[in-house]
Structures are given as C-alpha cells and as structure tokens.
Length: 428
Image (cartoon, rainbow, N blue to C red; front, side, top):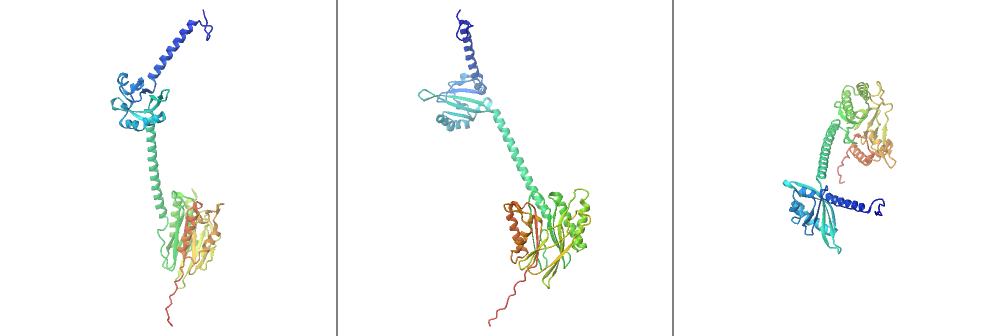
C-alpha cells in the first residue's frame, strides 16, 4: 500500500478521501458564511441590477431571491433622499475612486420601516481595467444609530444643563450686584463747600466683596464719613459689612468722637463673632466741619488697622495722615484708637482707599504697588479735585489688569478751588 508524501503513515487513498471531505466542508462553510453573515452582501452589474444577494440582506428587505436577483437595483430599496444621494454622490465617487466606505443610507424595510445602514462598495474591474461589477457590503446601523441618538440626547441634555447653569449664574450675578450695591450708598450727598467722589471696583462678579464706605450728615454743620474693609468674601463678609455700616451710622448719631464710634463698632463685632467664627474689619471714621467763611474744612478722624488717609494739597504735595496704634476692629475687647486731624484748604483733597489698591501686583516681578507709588501718583496730578482724582485712580486700577485681584473702594473728599473773579473791563 502506498504512502503519501505529506503523511507517510497514512495510505494514499485515505489521504485523498480526507482532502475531499475538507474541500467539501470548506465550500459549504464559505457559502454558509456568505448567506448567514451578520451583514448584507450583494453584487450588482454596472447598470445597478442585482446579480447576487445573501440571505441576511434578503431577510432585512423581507423579499425572496427570485423577487430580487435580475429584477431589482440597490436604489430600488433606498429612501427618496438616499436614492438622490446615491445618484449624485455615491455612484460618481465610486467610479472615480474605485471604493467608497461606510456611507450612511436608509433601506426601505417591510411595513414601511426604515433601516439605517452603512454601505461600503468596491468596483471590480476586468484585466483591461474596465469596470464589470460592484460588490457591496451593507452593515446594520440600528445599534450605532441608537448609540448616536443617545449621545445626541446626552449632548442636548448637557447643553441644556449648561444653559440653565449659565442662566442661574447670570441671575446669581445680578442678585449679587444688587446686594453689593445695597451695601454702598446709591449716591454721595452734596456737602456745602465741598466736593465728594467715590468708586468701587469689584474683583469678582461671583462673590460679594467686603469693602464699604459712606458719607452722611450729623447735623446742619457737620458730616460723617467712613471707609472700611471686612475680612473675607462672600455672604459672611456681606453680613459683617452690613452690620459695620449700620453700627457706624448709629454710633455717630450718639457720639461724634471718631475714637468712640470705632470703639462701639469693635464692641459689637467682638461680642457678635468672638464665640464662633471670628470676624473683623479695618476702617477709618471721620467727621467734617466746613467753615464756609474761611473756605476750609476741619477733619477729625481715627483709624482701626486701616491704610492711612492721603492728603493731596493744592500745590501738588501728597502726604499720608499718620494714625498710629490703630488696631484691627473686632479682635480685642478693649483696643486703643488714636485720633488724628487736618485742615483742608481750597484745592486740598482727602483720599481714603482700601488695600486692594496698594496691594495690587504690578510689573514683570509682580511686586506690590505700595503706598509710596500711590503717593507719587497722586502728587503728580496737578491741581486735581476730588472727582478728577477718583477718575485718575480709576484709570490706574483698570491698568492693573489681572494684578488687581481684590475689591477696592475709593472715597475722595475735597475743597474746591475758588472760581477766578472776573474783572470789569476798563477802557482807560
């Protein structure tokens, strides 16, 4: 009995029989794979007539092979829009490129349903390069369409959530702006023989600041003013700001002495917050006594841990008004506040500010702006009144850009220069 070269232990007849069985199984398997593949297959002639189609695609269409082969074109199973796209884009691109992949179309399925599919077609050519056949693979895209639909719904939901969040944020900003304005005077009252100007810079539209100021009459001759800065930001700081403003106003009506007013504020803050979350502030409180006959204003003030007031004179000099020993307000039960005073003549201006101005970061090294730079800046504004001074400082703050990361309040109180007296014309 002969032995084969591939397997010398197996008889030649047995080897041939085995090869025949494998060949038969291979042919059956290839046909079965084609017919029952998880995707649709079809081959069409160049005019679009279907020459071959597998069972999977026939099942999707709900038709028999006899109803399709040689009788239908691929475009017969497309929706109106899909047919138009096939004729204007799909077919021309296939002829030019020889292959086109994963084009989204819709097939007309039984019962008027639409079946979303992805179509890939390849042009088969003859030996001389002439196109003779189109082989097309059709993938069921229902799961992909459902996934894309879910993604689209989630995206729309996310966009709607973002819009609602932005709307809520905008309403919050509006509410914060209104609340912030409620902690400041709507406008400064006119003071006889003086001019007053103020400005408030908000570092963040999303958080309440703690800076505050006010100007109000004590009687028909004297006026009170204050400017301060509460530690912290947000609602807690706003609560302290509101308490400080109304305490200072009420205290000033009972005692005009600036040190007594600050002592009262200290007592209120210390008793209110010392047992829980400690809260404190810095502030300058003062009283103005205009002398209309002399054209001057006497200033009496005291400071509790606040940056010193700056006096800008009519001749261009600018000097700080020392207030030594002034402790933070609300920290100790019995602090000591030192009084100070000055006289403002025509053209002089008293400037109060919070530390957002002097602690702004400037230059490439991000250094603090500082009190000396502020003094030099104000001294360089020749013959500036209260309004001109605040306008110039507003421009300075704007120029700090991102270096200004804290709220800043400005209050300028000045004595205007007398108007020049017009002389009568004497022709002689």
